[in-house]
Amino acid sequence: MKLLIKIIVLAAVFAGGVWVGQNVALAPSQLVDQLPINVNKKSEVQEQVIKVNLMIDFGNGQVQTFNDVALAENPSVFDLLKKVTTENNLEFSSKDYGKDLGMLVESINKVANSQKANRFWHYWVNNVYAEIGASNYHLKTGDIVEWKYVENQFNLIKH
Image (cartoon, rainbow, N blue to C red; front, side):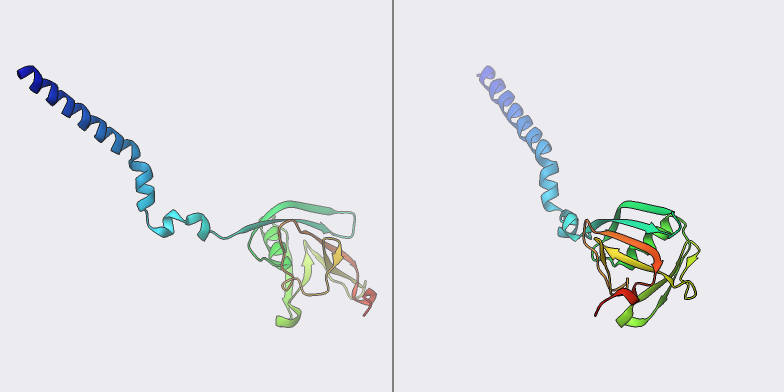
């Protein structure tokens, strides 16, 4: 009889150990399910990021390229230029012409618009000349933006 009691006690201890071990092993996954929604669904709350490419042609043979620039969702061409010039210590100036026209780039890295030389900063997106202000043109992943210091393009636009 004492042997039977010892076997029952041993079996109970073993079963209890298995139960405790199983709960400890499963605890991390069960804890994740119990986390608050805002922590558990963090990836859904994070902002979407897009990547675009930028080329700056200074009109004197100097060209700088910036590939796979990461920006928060729905950035403008102006946001891209501002980020790249800030991160790469390039001098940059602009003028705000209001909601309708947006931001006009006046100079990049000491190359300034010149009415006398009829040369200005213009931009293209995916090889298409943009006819709206840089702050009004919103980018999407994969876009290629080219800023060029060239002869005034406004005279060349056909309406």
